[in-house]
Image 1 (cartoon, rainbow, N blue to C red):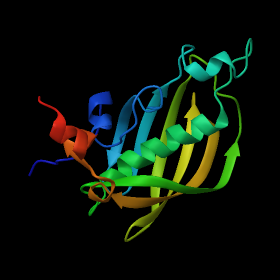
Image 2 (spheres, rainbow, N blue to C red; image 1 turned 90 degrees about the horizontal axis):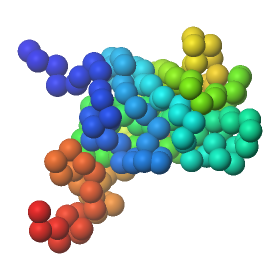
Image 3 (cartoon, rainbow, N blue to C red; image 1 turned 90 degrees about the vertical axis):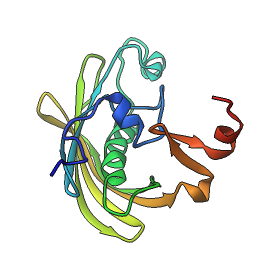
Length: 172
C-alpha cells in the first residue's frame, strides 16, 4: 500500500496545505512527518525578510510573533493531514505557555517540531518547539480550530486554496 502522505514536502506541497504566501509563508520545507502524531518543518531565515528593516536596524532579530507564526504554520500543515481535515483549514486560536529563549537572526535555520496533544471534533492542541543549531529558541502550546473551506467560499483547485467566486470567473 502506498502512503498518500509524503514524509518530506517542498514549498509547493506545503502551499497546497496552508493558504499562506510570501511574505507571510514562513515554512520552506517539511523534513519529517508522522501521520496524526508529529511534523518537523524548516524556515531559512534570510536577511531579506521584510521585518528585519525595522526589527532592529543594525541588530536584526526575528520578531517573536514571526517565530510563533512559523511554528503555527508547521502545525497547520500537520492539522491539514489529520483524519477528517479534508476541505478544512486550521485557524490559530490561542497560545499558552509560550517562551522565547534566545534570538533568531538572519542566516539561522529555524527547525520547528510540532506534536499533536489532543484533537476533538473541530478543535485541537499541539506542542511546538523551535530550535536553531539544536538549541531551543521558543516553545508553546497552540490551540487551533478547523473551519470548512466551503463556509468561507473557498476550495482547493490544482492544489491551491482559492476563493471559489474568483475561480468561477477565471477564464483559465
